[in-house]
Length: 331
Image (cartoon, rainbow, N blue to C red):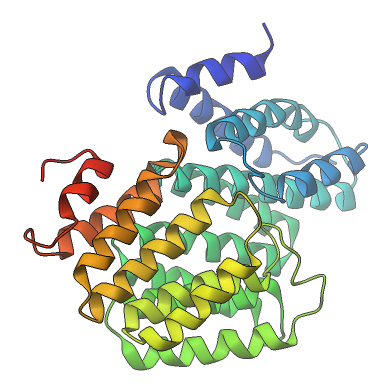
């Protein structure tokens, strides 16, 4: 049986036990290889592999993407252990940083925040060894989204600021991402002035990015992602008029199926409705958005956001029974 099938079988049972152990072993092996002094081989395949994964889920279940990444890391590990030129080593570390960062993103989306942090640490180590500050900034910016989405805005703001420092003042996808995450972290932590300044920064960056920097990948900063970030920041700030506008634009730019993105935008819309006093409509929107997700997406971030909205609404709000049913909690 292929290793990919073994990973899939383990992960199908849930991110615990053998599935999580296999991922942990892979990460440890990558860390050990990064600690060695090696030099290169044919890297074109791995550069194209990282680029291919960078286009995101494309409707695939997150666990399927994760098992594919884990399988490819098994082969990448062997390349890391072979002698390479200095330039080849830097390129390989760059690709390793990208792929480890993508493993971390999927783990984060699946609600495995602790394991996501570990993979982001591996990605950061690889990025640092590659010598590419923008990749390192991207890793830190993406890592900041883990504490941000799981209730630690101060930790998120610190990571986002590290990413902003590494990215510098020149327009780049990493600089835009870091400022976007900072705006959300400050908004979540109640630091309104800092959040609004970060919103202004990311909007200025977004206007100056090249088409390549706006690429719709995990490494780019497409306008669709920009509006998703701004939706969350403006929702948290209570600026609902601006939030509704950016939510509408995000939906216009979202590709089908984009299950998770559409659900998260809808949950933001529901939060805005609740802020504006229409709690019944908020419960209805959230119940439809979360309840309509495929089962593989009813976990992690979507579940966390929907539960937070549910807990913020009075229990006698019309529509709360449907929201409770969608979440599978006692009403």
